Image (cartoon, rainbow, N blue to C red; front, side):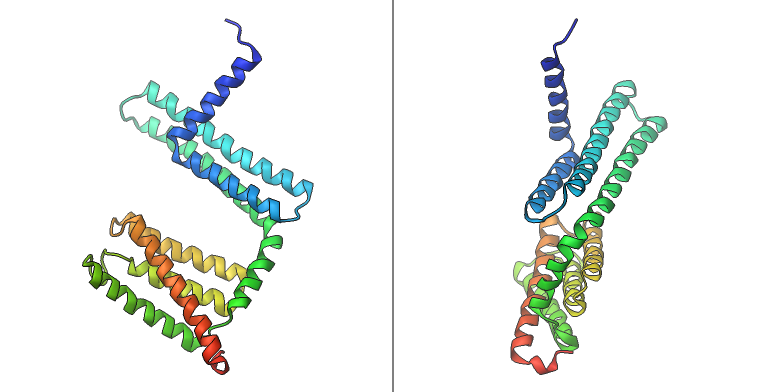
Length: 239
């Protein structure tokens, strides 16, 4: 049977739709691509840089499509659990991870010089809270977390409940470090550490995603508010 070119294209589109419908990571990659394209609209990147970004995104999507195909073949050949089937799936997933890491490095190398100056100005606009404001904000975050858990009647001080205390404190610290240093690299690294702390609460099944996100927002927002108040009321104590 001979297929027309348009039929081949339709089959390929069906494969993309299947991968998007069945693989959540494929949807994550598409969402990341949309955010990247939106960011490119506001950044004056060169045509070469745009081409490299498109190649990186395309390679990640290609790797995810290949991973989906390998998983389907393995499930067809070996419906039951088999060590070699696990090796095949893990190796394919590892290929996607390598592609994603390469795309992340490429994106950082290209976009950092455009985004970091804006991010630094944003941190400077909020201000440097200083030592006292940092300690005050963390203490207030802890107190508010305890009050919220008492009002909702869920969890204990260190286990479960709304919001996640670990996420709130971790993001409060990350926000304070970001504001005190004003350095985008340090800010991103500390936020990444806070995200890892929050993610560990999900992996241990102590909190739900809603509780973790609410905790992260609580810690960050309160810290920013305290920083702005401290800058307005007691500017002479900012260190």
